[in-house]
Image (cartoon, rainbow, N blue to C red; front, side, top):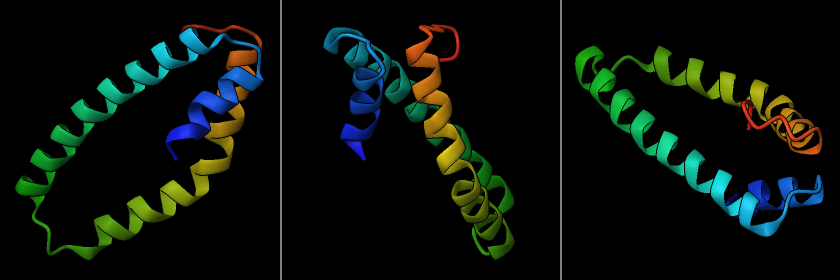
Length: 82
């Protein structure tokens, strides 16, 4: 998983340094979102399985489009969406 992001954006034409920078930004966003979703889990409760099922289905559905969008944004150098 860790090499997909850097490999995709390098394959689209960004340099290695730019790819690592955007990967770092994505890691920071991921860390913040983990804290937010952890707090939401504490508030909602972990026993409700429906939330987990919805998150799993959403992840499966959005996996391919998100990697395509990542490649397209790197190819067109659309920095705001990277």
